[in-house]
Image (tube, rainbow, N blue to C red; front, side, top):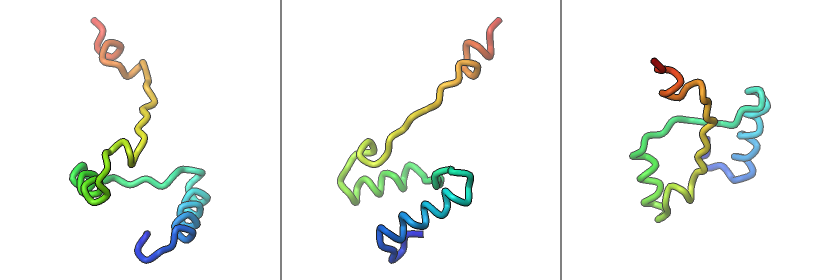
Length: 68
């Protein structure tokens, strides 16, 4: 997707994806090894690359699901 593309082209492709997928952001699965390799190449920490937020659902909590 990004090979040889300018930032403007990448942003346009991401917007096109979002427009054709009900407003969803582009996502892909990567291994922790790939993330480590990127961090090594850029000499940065994971927190410098991504922000991780989990939409917590109390009904999925262990205590809720396996109450005796």
